[in-house]
Every structure is written in structure tokens, then in C-alpha cells.
Image (cartoon, rainbow, N blue to C red; front, side, top):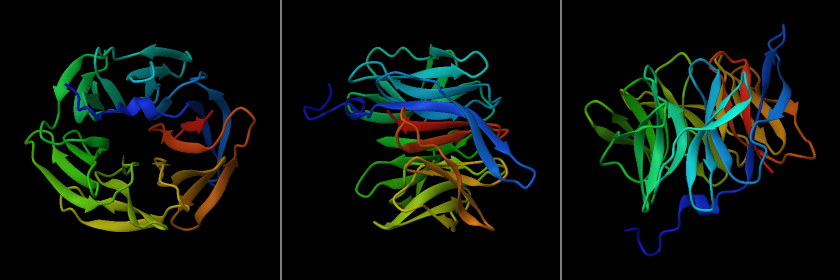
Length: 281
């Protein structure tokens, strides 16, 4: 049974939409966003998008009622939404394709416990990946066997696990929720919250555990995404910004509109042509 004080994570989820558009690059390298479409236009929680390896579909988390979430898939060519998982007593969060596998991983929340699970792309439940790591909040894959996980606690920690051996070790404290593989590498990036007003995006070598600072985040912002050519994208209110090593942070697009609020999570397709932007309703 669930603990007496257990409140499902989905119960506090905000009402958000996932907007999908094109990410264009001009002759001078300047990025622009065009043709944004609300892919999930409804009241409720639609969030945590991630692209499949072909860039043809987005896996995301959707609230199906006030206390449960499931994994859904949005096919970009058809503009069609389909429900992937049908869990009787569990919720899923943060669906992410596992490199080299016809499977995705997601946080499996049941009766107050949060484990990282593997699922087939048909929604079949294939079981826990790390049976001893809990509660997992967020994660990313460095390669087909190495996962970086945000594990809740006091303080929260960033832990790296080998899915084949089951070995897990802690590599950092007080990470942010946005964890990604750095394109073209087997390294992981994460936000280290040094102080309330000082957050850094850092790179992690999951083999050695070595970390190095990349850039300071925009003030109070922790959600970001990489382009395949090495820019970091981050929202600030209704504006989208990009970071490069040469120029630092610059505004890419002012996306203020009457039917969408602030930007939070972001995802970019593997080829860099598509972007998914989570916004409040």
C-alpha cells in the first residue's frame, strides 16, 4: 500500500502544452523558430517531450486524470497523438528513448515509489533498470548502458548507473532537473545549483566522474536543450535564448502570444530541424 501521506506527483502537475515547430539556421548561423503549432491543445499536463532517434515522433508525459500520467507519442508528419502506456496503477514521467534499443525509459511511480523502468515502444512494461535506486526524479542516457539520474533526497544527488552491471555511484549534489547527453559525445550535462542565485550548466564524464563548467544559466532558469551543433537553448519568460562559447547568451526568438505562457522544458530533434517547447496555458 501507499504511505498515508502519499500524494501522487500528477496531483500537483500544472496545465501545460507542447508546441512544435521548425528550428532554422541562417547563412550566418543565426537560429530562428517558425511555424509553431500547439500539438497538445487541451487543459491538463502535457510535458517532458523528447524526440525519437529519427526525429519523427515526440514521446511525452500526459495527465490522464487528476492523479495519473501516461506516456503519449506525437507523430510529427501526421500531427497525430497516440497513448503508448496503459498502466493500471502507476504513472510514468520523463519518457526517453534508450540509445540503440527499440525501447524507452521512464520514471515509473507506483504507491509512492519512483524507479527508472524500461518500456517497449508498444508500451509494454519491461521492468526496472536499477532495482536499488529510488526515488528517481529525472534521467538521461550517455550511451546504451550508462544512465545519469537525478535522485531525490536531502540533498538531491546526481547518480550514474551501469544498466548491465547494476553499479551506481553518486557524482554530484544539488543538481537541476534538466539532464542531457551532450550531442556528439558520451558526456552528460546537468545544472549544478551552487547557490540560490548561481546555477551552472556543467559537463560530466560518466566514466571518470570529472566535471567542468560550461556556462551559467539565465537567472533562475534550469530547463535547456542542446542543438546538434553545440548551442544551448533556454527559455526566459516567453523569450527563447541560445548560448554559444563565443557569444554567450543571446535572444533567438520573442515568442509572446495570447494563447501561450512562459517557456519551460525544451527538446530538439537529433538533426536539429525541429523543436518542442513546453509552455503554460
